[in-house]
Length: 461
Image (cartoon, rainbow, N blue to C red; front, side, top):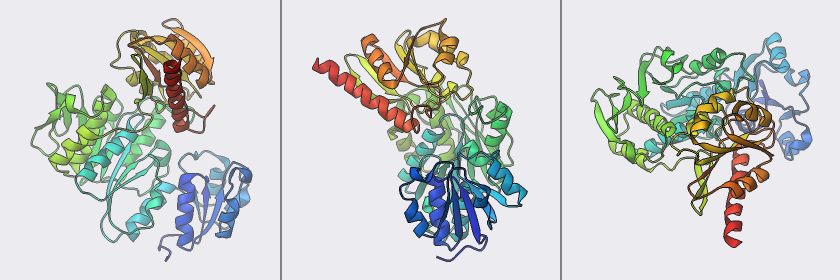
């Protein structure tokens, strides 16, 4: 494969996970010399020898500064902060520091046999569901859709084809920190609430990273924002502003009125479908649906595809997913609820005192006291796990019974004993998973397996 004209001779990639590996393969195929660095030891990567045979230079346990020798670019995997010593060293040497998203986007644009269409979604909560929901609608419309980015498939994975496609990408604030030319024709920001404050000095810095999604938009593009969110409502873009709201009419956008979802994105102010017809329940999913509808209308998806997508989308794993049910007790996996706002929204719609809530994990400097209104309204018992257990108990102990269970096994066992018909056992931790799990998916799968086992044991007893 011929090297694209803008690529340098040598690239250093920091981070040897999915995105870093995917980009490394693509660059090696294009004749670029690649160095790959990671903080983990070589023993953590059983295929290291295979990568060395492919021509990649590997640097582990840090890596040291010689990782950057002869490189013109340092490319960061999504989870790597720009504040690290290696990044500072690269900048001092005059290297161009980029993100995997930026490099993959440039390659896809340069090598495509026709024009691509780009829809990018970010936000604190709901971005994965919204991204997948948009893709569902556009697939039903017959579009060649590539679902990519932070949702699980790196953008670099699509570099083996030059066919033009509609890319629907979930992008994180970490990825947006390093964009330069990345240009979405439709940019969607679902909301901005406190999150990742262990990485950002202030909420305003986190919000500014999200707002970079609109950096390269033009008057021909669309900026889809949540009018009910005070931060996104103030965001500026050169693109046409398309607001969505579940609380008030939004001229030129989408909104809820009289039990119906309505859209004025195309200037026809039409009723799209009843709220009761949405595939996924809950206020948070209504917001996700409104954002997906707005994006679909921006790219002129047919009305039939929009209606089918909104009413038949099955959702994503670990996002308020029913994983077990027996004896009138429902077990819900919302392991993706990794911050306080996500958990607060997950608690909406439950009856008074009907929820046994599992909270905790690695604290991201969230304000657990913000959960008090929702917990007071619907929770009967809070079971705490992980490193943040004491912080959760300190914030909520005066409004609900709490019990420190430390591990998921103990939490599920305690929930099984405490649950009664009509209850919901809800895992919505409001924390990261990295104290006890590799990621939120592993945490959710563990909870689901334990919940199913608990149900089976109860029936077998």
